[in-house]
Image 1 (tube, rainbow, N blue to C red):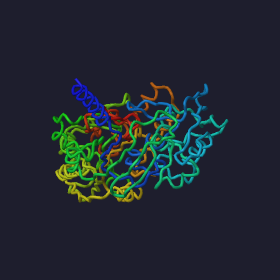
Image 2: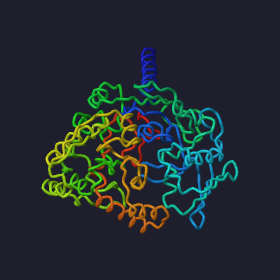
Image 3: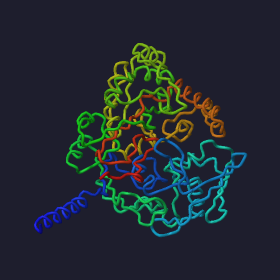
Image 4: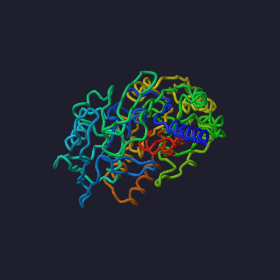
Length: 492
């Protein structure tokens, strides 16, 4: 009997030890393709910045949820005046930045005034253009007065570019980001990884993860080996061509979702001969979207005919505007005085959709007489040469910002597009709150862009996620460019 009791006691101890040993883990290594140029969401256009920091380290007055909905964030509630011009935000109290400084209404005023200042380096300065004044009512209340009603204002305040920063740390956020989120920055090993750790002083619901490392993996061929070895447990944006290697493996979850990534063949509209409408239309007729989608996104991308996601309630299907028609493309080039064709350059950033798509598009344009020299560039080069200096003929990129059709109205934007009729539609949209009228205006905007063949509209970038089957809480869709870890945890 004593022996049996000893064995039973040993078994109970063994079971207890086993339960502890198999408790849910609290660390995570996430694979990302591109390294951010810096770590300040309010001072850069690169999506990779938000993919690491949005909702994790930095927070805004509002935030965008996994289905594109507007949610409260640092503002626990708000009221809107009858004329739609005054927003009064009630802020959470007891909030601290990761360096221990207090968050209050003065930080909101500082952040919004900084973002819209004449010398602002915010990549989405237009988000703040409607703001007239920002006033501190008391430490927990801030009043924002707009120049005119803006139906998208609360949504705009949820962008990564609108996160709240502190005056004490704003100037050093590029290298050492200081926010109010559930994770705080720990380290950045340049070229390798960025590590976040749980903030013990977070004002809201604590994160389940204690540590999250964003591992930079620029080579898509390395994704599958990294997953199989367990070195990386999640690729929220996986290589579409590699999905077949893991889709039937029960250790992993494969999730195909939607994004806000309009993948386009960008055209420098003021550079001859692309300043001629017939040339841009010829390019659109030369594009075989199905072949491009099959080759650049493993057939998973959704074709688009203008700058709007098919997942949007305001989407207009214009994919039939330019059917693949080589003869029509040649005819238009002849009308433009280019019956013998011409040479141009195609600068391609690192993402697979660009490099693979570029080869296909170069072949298709060659069929109509346009001979492209392919120039691969790194992301930093693309941002400098193409996006900033407009030193390019053609390029391929996916614009992942949400609801960003207004970029075509920006006079300093890299498309170099200028159409007063389009600008008028966007201006009217900016002062319209009525949903039916906004839908009508957005439809008009999409049609103008298609008719002008401003760019070659290709496909909506699919969100292909692959991660450990025991992981919960990662976003299936990407309504904004983010890897929100606030609800991510391991099942036991």
